[in-house]
Length: 153
Image (cartoon, rainbow, N blue to C red; front, side, top):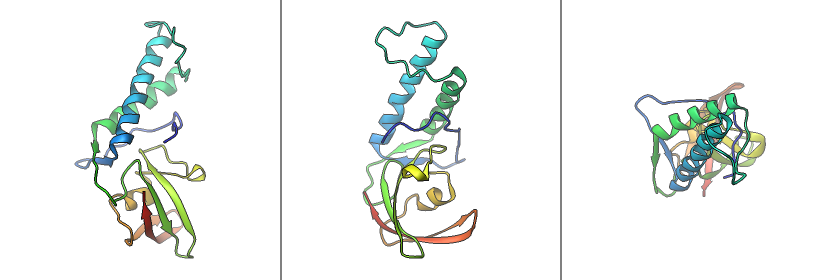
């Protein structure tokens, strides 16, 4: 997974966890540590001798870190195969037959133009835990829609 934009928002699902691959969970933990270091450097508490400072504005870095911590607090790393979870790619068939492939990403990181669907978007939430062959209905801004899960990788 490539680095998501710094504008991830805090999103929780009361009573529910965010299922994700162990690799996605580890990537979030690494990003959390980098952001913590960035904020320490920006606050003058640590020197950036290794040159790894991401250099996000403090406000954006703080917002991103808070969102990551919320997601990590409700994360459930899992090895479950064949199901759509955060960190996996899913190919869907639209009602018109068009095939689209997306990576399911953490809440707030969706960017469909780059192939990322946020787990808290209407489509992402509907796809969570789906398997190949499942017909998945969801409410889109343009009205009710239905897609079929073709492949999960």
